[in-house]
Length: 459
Ligand code: ARG
Image (cartoon, rainbow, N blue to C red; front, side, top):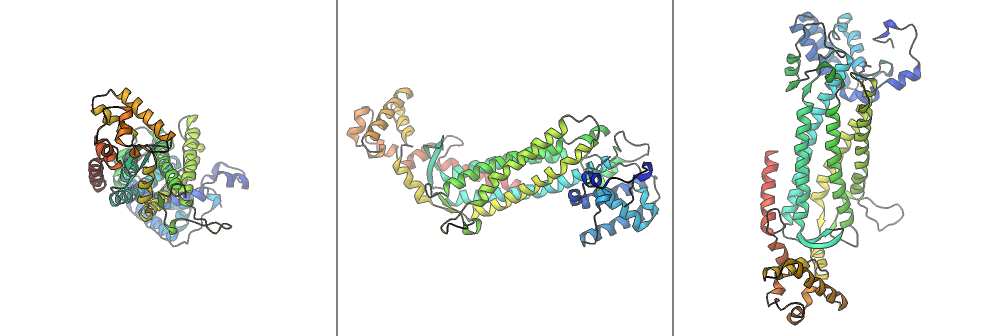
């Protein structure tokens, strides 16, 4: 098909080069933004007296027709027309004649693609924000429903101290709350309008960039034309947000996978969220969690790729920037899918509270509480640590746990132990006593859940 930029060329483009340089296969997903941006641009051209009002109307009618065609599946995207911008412009001229050629006045594909990408990302950020709130809600509901179940808390994946299962889940809620707030920052810096930068230097026509920004719902306008066409930091920021979010989900995935093992059996995922094995009839695999954990890798990859693409580029536009889109689109799809499937999966999973609490009868995670008991009776913490350490060793050698010791046995290690020691090291007491702000006590977790409910409402 004849090129919109064909004038200077004596020869046709090599077919392989055409295919290699074209982006229509992936940038066609920005057709709505491209058309909305062009309509705003045409209105502005007429308002500023650069084209006639009737010409703008003809152009806008033509563009609306193209939009309807694309949505109805009646539009064939041509590789020879390179990208979404030229596919639409070429069809416009076919539909309405040479007046279609006036649309590209005071505009370049460089500022056009920047505009489309900003608009597209803004739409997706709004969608992702909503889904993120759903996921937070699902975590919050699950925490609230199982508020008082006690589980072992870990460091180094070794049992450390008893905690509330709800406290553990709420840790993820707060990570996601920060992700949500980070996304707000990405929105702010994506909400800047680049059109009117022209190819790189602005334009000789008396355009009104603020009018375009207002029509398209942008809060700000890029203040430097070179920056407007060659900035991709909003893409990088989105990819950074997405990488951190996926890292959080990957850690949660790892725990869900672990908790679903026969060895842990802390939770059971719903059948609807698992898959089986083609050979082992008994298998029920946590594929969703494994995939989310795996997919975090490709999102990190897209962030690294974009940083690498941008790092050596001189101002202003370079074709290298065309490489921004596939990683961005794939990241958007991956994040949306991951958070949506996770919201459903968490809501449906079964929590095996008995099993969690039963594991605590077979360990030493109340040892810190035993030391704290002695400290409250006046012993310096270091000495208390030593006393409890020796008691633990005694228990291990005698096949016992701390709560199995008799008062006489306790007193072998320190005369400070009295009747109340047994109650002081019950797991419920261990949990209830960790009442410092942000701790795992029933009271603190209750407060955290209340505060989280407020956050979700205001998000
Ligand atoms: N398809 C191009 C991109 O994605 C659009 C801008 C091309 N501009 C140019 N002068 N070749 O970046």
